[in-house]
Image 1 (cartoon, helix red, strand yellow):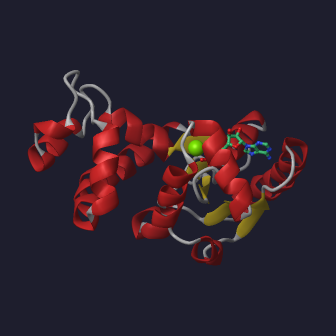
Image 2 (cartoon, helix red, strand yellow):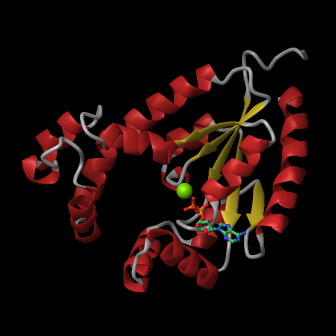
Length: 209
Ligand SMILES: Nc1ncnc2c1ncn2[C@@H]1O[C@H](COP(=O)(O)OP(=O)(O)O)[C@@H](O)[C@H]1O
Ligand SMILES: [Mg+2]
């Protein structure tokens, strides 16, 4: 075992727009042995029945936004934050610090992995998350492909998908943050090849850090 990595596993922030392929890319890195932390998964756990963020959301937004089962009413909240930017901020002020705390805890559990990929859709908006990672990987695809994949996956209408994409940090802004870019316009075989190349880089970077 080489020295250093028990104290500091190399950490890559994986970001990109909805439907661009973050989860698919994370799965490919996992197959190669990377540790994976997915902040979307953490966010869902915090807001599921009895989740850690529910009490604060109830206090801030009222019972209307909590289901009978005690989970965040996602559809209702989505409706609110599309039309109300301050509500979006209010929700983020509750969720983001908790997500960060859980991500850090998972990071400590993954110390033996050669390096770690943290899937962080909110990376462009979050200085705290940018501080946590040593490198930023953006998975990018063209707007038409993105729209097709979002509609295909989530059963959304084109209008709903466009509304979500419009709310996100623009593609060009996201790419400005990138140390590495994966272009996900072709098939899964091409994607896997790009991941394998980066895996080689990240495995070696660990020891230089
Ligand atoms: N290269 C690809 N070829 C075909 N389908 C893809 C490719 N990359 C991703 N997909 C599909 O597109 C959808 C969105 O990908 P996903 O990884 O879930 O995106 P994200 O996590 O960024 O929202 C999924 O249904 C996924 O299976
Ligand atoms: Mg995903």
